[in-house]
Length: 207
Image 1 (cartoon, rainbow, N blue to C red):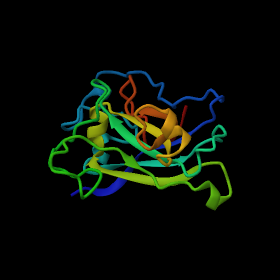
Image 2: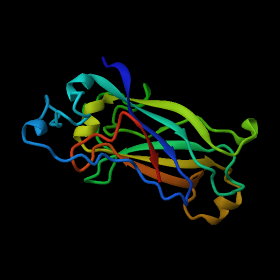
Image 3: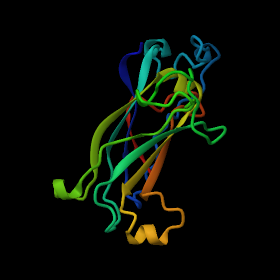
């Protein structure tokens, strides 16, 4: 089984106007020896920096910590927002396939025919209960899949801030194909940069 989960990505959201983006490593490619692969994952030995080898993360699951967002635009339908976290294959645009189709990655109750990694969701941030309209979740979601597999596949993690509204609401009546979710904003994080360095193991601000 997997060891205790390792923080794979940690994120928060900025305001619409602050112009900040996902933080990415700007390090150079380095020489051939520093780009040598480790194990079966094909990652650079310095993917996590000069002092940490990818081998240190073997057999760890991936965990994503969702911290908070900036103040959202006023919207009467935003009362108890949640964050849905999707893991996507950057090549196909589809959900990333499981390394082992029989593995239950997000829930013990996953159907046997699910061969891709299903999205996960935080608990709701209830503005009324908190008496505050700055959304904060401070929640860690653990994917029961090899952490290094996500990086080797150059997976992209999409963060979708949504709220659930009644089917009789104005949104439900005016949006074609309404599915019960009122979509507020989104951001994404490429787990591995173009230079082969990991954009994980630290808190980043998404835009």
